[in-house]
Image (tube, rainbow, N blue to C red; front, side):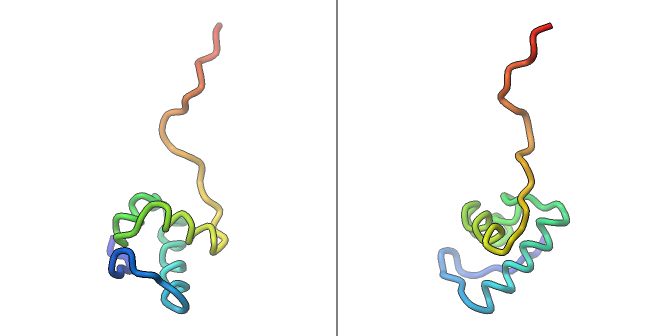
Length: 73
């Protein structure tokens, strides 16, 4: 998954931020995880989560096992 990358830790503003957000949104909505997008763009999980939220993406619920106790029969 080749994604838009920039120097790690470098601030992204203006048109570059809008373009990156659109690219991340498209890939996220096609099923890519936030972690996979973060790795592909050399950004943190928090950055990707924040940029998706800023641009109105409805985030999926957590995957994997839940921590609730099983119901007693």
